[in-house]
Amino acid sequence: MDDKDLEILRILEENSRLTADEIATMTKISLKELENRIHALENARVIRKYTTVINWEKVGNGEVSAIIELKVSPERDFGYDRIAERLSRFNEVKSLRLLTGTYDLQLLVTGKNMQDVSRFVSEHIAPMDRIRETATHIIMKSYKENGNTLFEQQETERLPFSF
Amino acid sequence: MKDPISKRAYVIPPSGIRKFFDLAVTMEGVISLGVGEPDFTTPWKICESSIYSIEQGTTSYTSNKGLHSLREALSRYLLQHYNLRYNCDTEIIITTGVSEALDLSIRAIVDPGDEVLIAQPSYVSYGPCVTLAGGTPVSVECTEADNFKINVERLEQKLTKKTKAVIINYPNNPTGAVLRGKDLEQIADFVIDNDLFLISDEVYAELTYEGQHTAAAIVGNLWERTVTLNGFSKAFAMTGWRIGYLCAPQKICEAALKIHQYTMLCAPVMGQVAALEALRSAEDEKNAMVNEYRLRRNMFVAGLNRIGLQCHVPEGAFYAFPSVKSTGLSDTDFAERLLKEYQVAVVPGSVFGVGGENHLRCAYAVSRKDLSEALSRMGTFISQL
Ligand SMILES: Cc1ncc(COP(=O)(O)O)c(C=O)c1O
Image 1 (tube, helix red, strand yellow):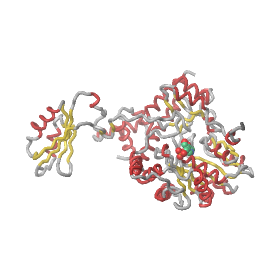
Image 2 (tube, protein in one colour):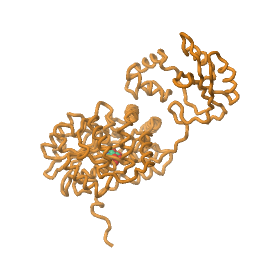
Image 3 (cartoon, each protein chain N blue to C red):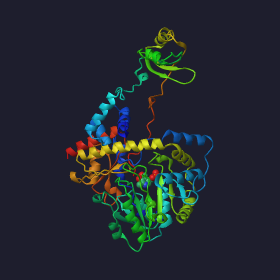
Image 4 (cartoon, protein in one colour):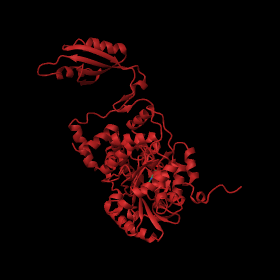
C-alpha cells in the first residue's frame, strides 16, 4: 500500500462509477498500472464492493433503522468474535462494531417498520446466549451518513465571472 | 455643473468586457469556468469558530495591524511553509484581502511619475492600482514559449530611469505558471542591480501542484526589497471573509500601515478570527482541496488537449490557459460564441493584458461533473466550427 493506492482508494470511495480511464487521467497513473493496482486492491479484499449512497428517507418506503447496544459476556479463547460473527449473519444487521464503554457491541439494524425491528430484537437478538443486556434506539432522522450530508443545503449565490 | 469625475477615475479602464458578462448572468443553464474563486465553502471549523466568537461579542475594531494572535500565528506559518522570516510586530499587516494589500504596497512605494513593470498576462487590478497611485503601469509580456514565466530580457527592454518597482504573481492568474528558485534568482539580480522593489502577489502559493512554492523574498538578497502579498481567499476557500496580509521590511510596512490606518482602519475582526482558526486547524481541509484541484487540473487539461485546444500544464493556481489559435477565432469571439451557443462561460485571455490574446482563462475550481460537461460542450462547439 503506497500513496498511489491511497489516492486511488480515496477517489473510488468518493465516486466508484468513474472509469479506469478517467482515474488514470486524473492521477497521471498509466491505465495499465491503474488497472493492476485496482485488481490487487480487489483481490486483497481492501476494496469490498462498489456501492451507492441512497437517502432511503426520501424513497419513503417507511423503513425503520435502530441502533442496538449489547452487553455481551465474552467467550474464553474467542472473546467477542464468535458471537459477533453469528450476529453479523442476519440480513437485518447492517453494521456491527465492538466498542469500549458501557456496552460491548453496537448494531445498526433495519426493518420494514417499527414492529419488524422490535420483533427482530426481542426474538432473535435478546435471547441469544451470552447477551446480558440490550438497549434499542430507534433512528428518527438521519442527517449524515458516511461523510455525506443528507439534508438539502441552500445554494449560495456565485458570480458567473470574477477575475 | 463641473464634471464630478476625477481624471484618475476616467483613465482607469472599466473592468473587463461588461456587456458580455452581464449576458451570462441572465442566461439559463450556464456552466461558468469564469470564476476566480474556489467552489468549496469555507471549512466548517473555520466558520464555526468565527460564529462562536461573534456570540462571545467579538465585534469590535482590532489594532490597525490586525489581531496580535493572528500575526503571531502567521509569522510561524510563513516560516514553516515558505521559510519566510517576518516579525509579527513590525513586518506584517493584516489587510482586507490581498486586494487591499496590493493597493497599500503600491501606494507606499510608487510616486507620481514612477513606472511599475507588470508581468502580463496578469490579474486585472495591478495596472489600475498603479494608475490610481499616480504611477505609470508598464506591461511586460510573458509568452507561452517561456511557459508564461517572466523573462528578464523583456524586463530589461522596458526598464527606464523612472522604473521603481516590479509586480509579479506566481502561481499566476490567469496562466497557472509558477516560478522556481532559479527563475527567481534572475529576477533578484535584475531588481537588485537596478535598485528596484518587488511586489510579489503569492495568493496562490498553496496551490502549487508539483513540488513546493518558492517565495520570492527568500531568494538572494530580495527580502529587503520585496513586499510579499498573500491571503486566505484561495487556499482556504475564504474569499468572502476578506482577509489578506502584507509582509515587508519595517520601513515599507510602516508607510503601508499609515495608509491602511486612514483608509481601512483594520480588517474585519470576524474574518481575522476565522483566519486564525484556518492556520491553527484547517491544514487537512486545505490539503484535501488542493488535491482535488490537482485531480481536476489533470482531467481538464487532458480534455482540452483532446478536443483540440492546445494547453500547457499549469503548475499552480486553478486556471487552465489554452490557446484558441487552432480554431481561427479570436479569444473574444470564441468566448462570446461559446457562451451564446453552448452556455459555457470562459474569460477571453486579452482581458489579462498583453500575452493573453488568443487564449482563454478557464477556472477549474468547478465540480468534476461540470468540468466534463463543459469539455463536452466545448468539444462539440469546436467540431462544428
Ligand atoms: C492574483 C490575485 N491577486 C489578488 C486577488 C484578490 O484576492 P483577495 O480576495 O485576497 O482580495 C485575486 C483574486 O482573484 C487574484 O487572482
